Image (tube, rainbow over all chains, first blue to last red; front, side):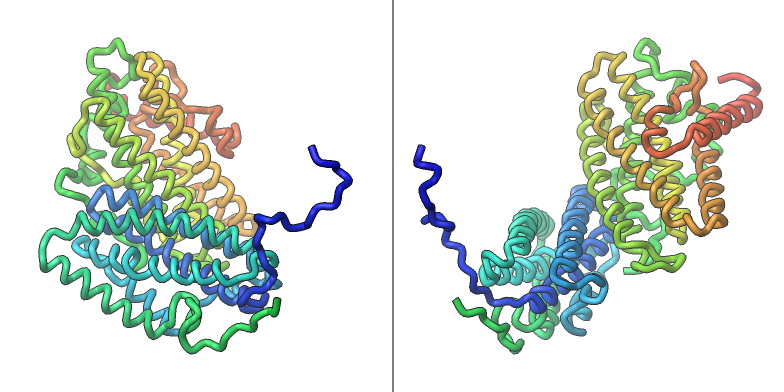
Length: 220
Length: 274
């Protein structure tokens, strides 16, 4: 073993974490509040839909996924006070009214013959946008100062990828005719247009593009 | 998507056959306590000639009950906004209901596998939607008390009975699965007990209404007295697990008395025997 008194670098050669990050505390809290809002709307809808879908396997998957998104909402809820937002309800909000319109449209299908629309909205539109926003956040935040958010993002992204794959495979198994393929595509297109107006799950700038003011960059 | 989804619209595939609650309660087999609670009207025992069919029927009843419990917990996530009003719920209550959704989804999966293991086809027995009907109460406290304390409490008794049946019948798969589901049910009943106390801490009137609703549900689903502490009770009241789940000794005593009364009433209606 090396001499325990010998000075060692604080950061090992393999540890490439850096201080700079794209988001300050306020911007991080704003995004986390948006994430919590969308995770809540999603888990509530998944739970509500369970009774409305006749397909047994879909029913059980929705029940499982409902909890995962509730857990994500809880993670974000617990992160907010750590970002100086003690009243967590204050920042639990959509980024803009277009995001509200998007989620209203996602949760609108109710009939037992609308399983395709329900799943397309979640697994072909919403979850891919969540993965995009979470990935952008993960790749741009400070790897030292914002480590707690990074840990949550990694845990959540793991769920999102698994759920996206589950949902996509179920959708593929449900699409049996050209008409159903067109239904799925039309519904996805309708929702994508609404999401375009919203600018992403955290509004414009969700993935670094768009019209949002560029968050301040902390110099190295 | 609307709030409060009616029981008659619960979505099912073509295998499922619906039996409405009135039909179920007017069925003489239910009155005798010899329906899914045990075809013999007495304890589920591997030595009884009807035991395999009774166990399969009970297992199928558990399966459809799990589907409805999943649907009910899911609707509680959707039906109520977050807030402090009488028709609103705390954020944490919704999280508990989402957790219950996951648990009930696993119970459905377990029940499908177990039904297959026991040689039962899905839809082989009729489904009544009484559990879900209790989950339609517009007051969240009454809903949780009726579902999580009365019906999930019944589930504790049923799972414990099935677990013991698995042990006696030398069926380790049944015993293993029921033991796991029993652990979850204790958690769900405890959720109901905890939320009842928290949400009615300053509202004794609402607490009493909730407990009265629980009594109604408990009496309605006492299965003609099939659930009780008597030696011949087909479904044993699982006193220890209920206490773990937040029931007081007095509350368990009350359910035991209620079951004994229900059994006496059922026997009087059917001329005193099974």
